[in-house]
Image (tube, rainbow, N blue to C red):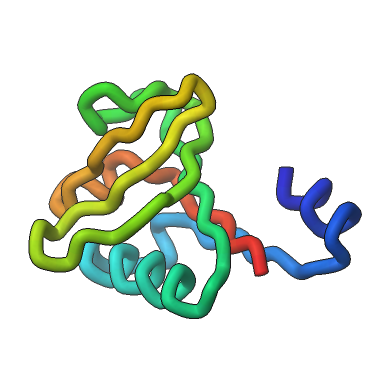
Length: 100
């Protein structure tokens, strides 16, 4: 998907493995910074996810960050929004793709 984004728009993209971040908060802050910068963010989930209703081995577009509630809102291709809490972020996300 990221390569297609680059070909279609001419814009860059970056992949960040969740293990690049020491804590859930660090990953949360990176997602928030990317959104604040006007970038699009996609979360890739693990094969065995622990994110409640999130599908495993899947991609979700990050829609917003709720700083007060310490959670991110993601959109899935089936047209549903879901919340992933900060304390479960690294367990849920294998990594993030930042689309510039």
